[in-house]
Length: 218
Image 1 (spheres, rainbow, N blue to C red):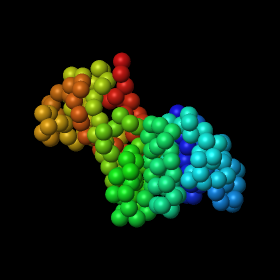
Image 2: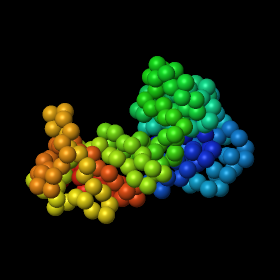
Image 3: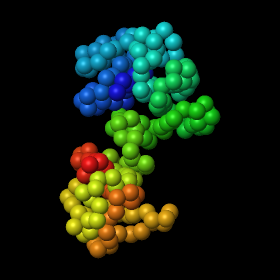
Image 4: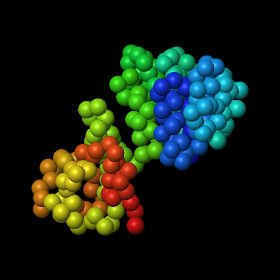
């Protein structure tokens, strides 16, 4: 997956690092000389000196082939303008960091896929939006040590299992099932079926393993 990030500050730099460690192809756009030099020293990625509010810079970053664009600077106006420019390149997913929640409506009206408020603009949260599209919803709890995931069971090996036989563990606990739009609190003898939407409270470090357990298709 090719991901172009505008902004080499703390959020952009950490996000790029997470994505690179996951094997993603990352290009970082940064206008500040010191920040771009720091990014070049720390990341195994292409660093473009410039701003995402300039189409020549975007094209130099390979925006034509990008799957995701993230505007991660602390400037809402620059982030919005960059996202609007990127929309002309038919990028599949556009994500913007917003510093002032009052600006969220402007991003929504502009058709930006995700406008993330300051409370959620951690690099790890943005990484989840990019790499885990199968998660219908996600809530970060506490200091980011645990997350509540809404996912659909796809692994046939889980089909027919009793909740009490697979939950809880020291990594996760199934806290709810959804049937016909209603929330069902699972009992130990509740049988889990393929295609069922469930909510799981998961330790952050175990998310990939848990997702594979429930969503891996045979």
